[in-house]
Length: 207
Image (cartoon, rainbow, N blue to C red; front, side, top):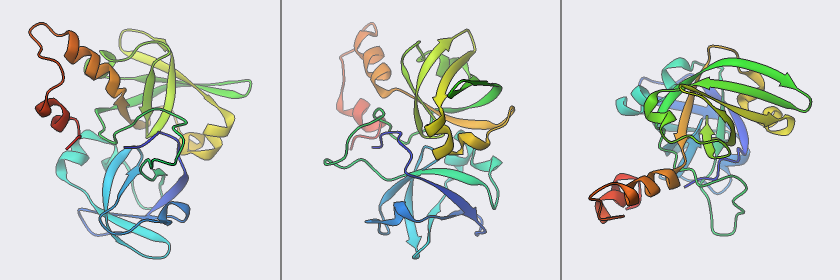
């Protein structure tokens, strides 16, 4: 589980097929092989690490659901270590299970902020509400506007400078994870639902 507060921006290094290697510094503190780390909002398992990088195996399913296939050597990625009990939740609860990708269709600079408009699939838009949470490339953001197939988020300068949002361009593909609470609520109110079951929790990463 993560918070959507990015700790560091890493850079993708050359690696073998099926392996993602990222240069990093801060997020390596306290990490060891077998631990989880969020890369652009994707929860990955650290397979190997050095003093300045880590590597993780990438499954075909992960590639299909995320923007990893659009990343290449030298590209920057958002990094976050898992939430711990003594760490503040400055964003919202993010699982690192990307629901789908979206496409940036508009970037408008405002005083002290960047307004980002993203096109998303109906499956994602189903869970998006104004003033609700959304994780974009692992960044916890608040939805400021929702239309039929697009939504907008306003990003303060500090967040933009501290993440890869400072480098985004129109047409870029981003990872999206909706607020897990919305899924829980839907499960509770669904006709014939028996509420939150062990199978439901397992399906959504609670094992």
